[in-house]
Image (cartoon, rainbow, N blue to C red; front, top):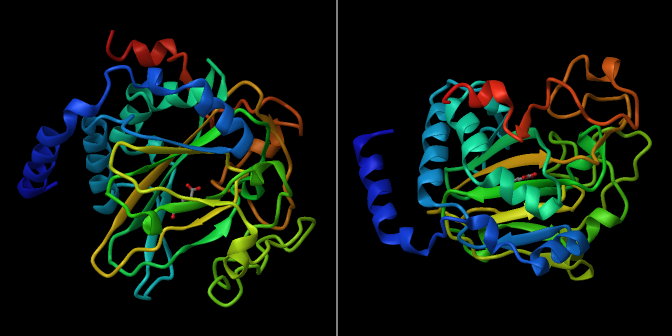
Length: 305
Ligand SMILES: O=C(O)CCC(=O)C(=O)O
């Protein structure tokens, strides 16, 4: 991170810290939890202090400088190119620190109602060049070998976003059909082109029929977090010519999550070689691929106690 960037972040901090509570978990109300259960989606304002955002920004800097997991590029070479990279918890210390030390795990724990929490994955979605495309509509559950309710993806933007630039969600869709995923190479021509092409029904063309869906999105300031069940249909969030959208999603789950099989035609995301050899469908999702985050394991506490 350059000196200019640090100065810019420090001045951001000076202007905004007052509105952030020292106990952000107490901002989550019964209404938020009810809304999460019903709609599978809730946005909570001002829950991440700018210092946590600074930690993510430093982590992202490391990722973009090449010290991270493989960067996938969507719409590569086109004006709207955007970058996705997954499971940086394993290799980027700032992401590891964020997951253990920031309030994000306790926020998710309260929303999903679980004291025990495991990390499913972390994933950056970076649209920096201006005029980035919409993220195609999809659910995450078809790509993940899981079933259960106690799971949430916490979507965190490091940039201020208009409602049109925010990710969009179809409220309640986690309770409906689990559709096939989209095919990244064909999505520009056909957003319903299947990922597996086997066993799961094809995605509907939501963009062509927006008025048939209860689509939610918000104006976002850094520090606001959207919590979404991965079965909720989501997509969108294009950027304008002069805007950028650097987001990370932290995905955590609780006691009720189980291993489930997906069509065998493609691997699930992220890759977890060996997982299907150790678990049977219906088993609790326990594996070294999914580290325990709460309670903090004693060997992790021992790093600083
Ligand atoms: O930020 C994006 O564009 C996509 C995010 C997403 O698909 C997710 O968090 O599951």
